[in-house]
Figure 1 (cartoon, one colour):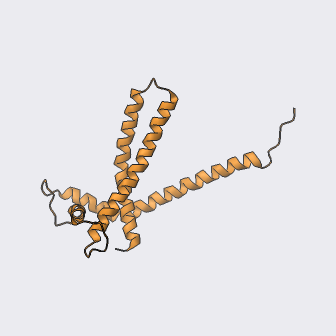
Figure 2: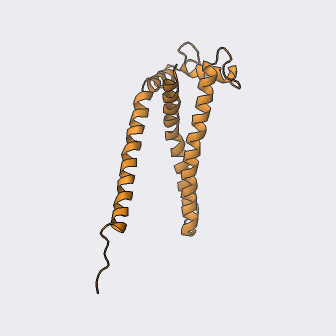
Figure 3: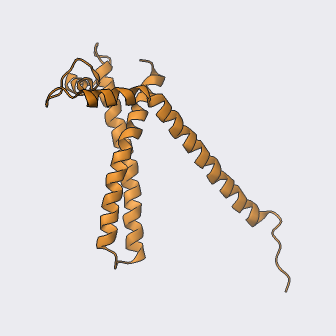
Length: 158
C-alpha cells in the first residue's frame, strides 16, 4: 500500500464515519435547542457553533484513529513505533473475509464494508469535487463583495 492509497483509505473511512457522527451530533444539537428554546440568541448560536466544532473534531479524531489502525495493520516488521498488534487485529477483524465476528458470522456486514472499501476512491473524489465547488462559490462571493465595496463605488448625490 503506497502513501496515496493509504491516505485515500483513511480519509474515505473518515468521511463514511462522519455521516453517522454528524447525524448524532445534529440530533444532540436539536435536543439542546429545544431544551433552551427560551434562551437568548447568543446561547442558541453557541450551541450550534459547538455542534459544528464537535462535528469537525469528530472527523479529525476519526481520521487519527483510522490512520493509527491502518498503520498498525501494515506494521508487520516494526517500522512504526507505537503501533500494536491489538489494534491491527481489530482492523483485520472487519476487513478479512476469513475472520468470523464475535457474535457469529455476519456476511452482510463484511460484504457491506468490502463494498465501501472498494468505493473509497469515488467517495473521496466526490467529497473533493464538492469541496472545490463550494470553495469556488465562496471565493466568488467574496470577490463580488470586494468589487461592490471597492470598485466603482460612488456616493449618491443628494
